[in-house]
Image (cartoon, rainbow, N blue to C red; front, side):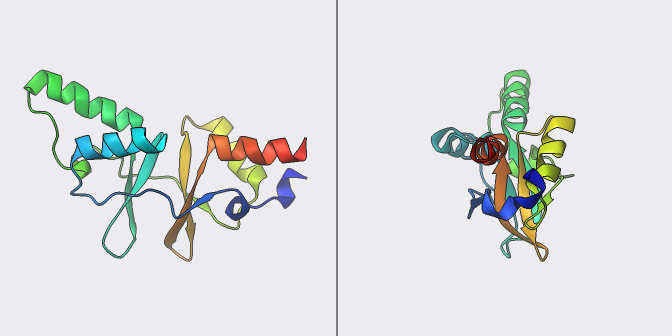
Length: 131
């Protein structure tokens, strides 16, 4: 039954996203304020450039402690090679990806554009409906 559920029906549509020049401290604040583990980084047209996660924020903090220069633009810390999910993918495929990888969330794409984000919590909500 999990194969009949689609990512687009459980993703967070219109997710928080950042521009590459966003100040890293502002991005960390936004993640904390929204209760998210990460968010996509997009250009002015909404094309996916990367993903900024809690782990990336920790790297920025560690860098700041070594060089005593907190902050900087997000694109200095974001992950550039991003795995994504397609909006029409099955939740079974999404759950398999969560189990196989350490990611807490995936950007969701449709026709080459960012349309949402699917988190582990979103996947659990889908499973809860089945059970």
